[in-house]
Image 1: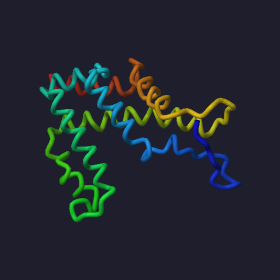
Image 2: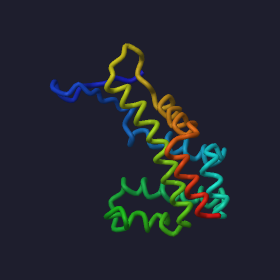
Image 3: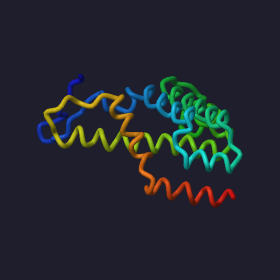
Image 4: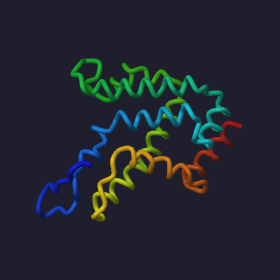
Length: 162
């Protein structure tokens, strides 16, 4: 269990490091890698198959994106700004559809995590705080809805690559 704090007496929101994106970057990236490995997002896999993007190419794009993120912790001419850091990491050299897949996976994961975390922070309950593993489970819940905007988007992309 972690603690929460109020940042000011006039702000009822609660802050917890358990919900902090930076502190929880590693388990979220591990979750995303697992989604890629298990091909859990069927609509995404269909688009990747239609675009002839391999599992390895998506994995390489994720790896480069993780290098981009990690480079932010090091002051260097290779990462003075985000664009330079993205180029240096190799992410922008990856196939565009592999880049889109990585960004979609990250967006999907954080859409679920943020919703669950915001509820946890703002609705105030007597239950123990959610930990990162519980928040990551919320990332899977959003993908599980078949008639979501994300599913519709992937159907449009799939039709585009026919």
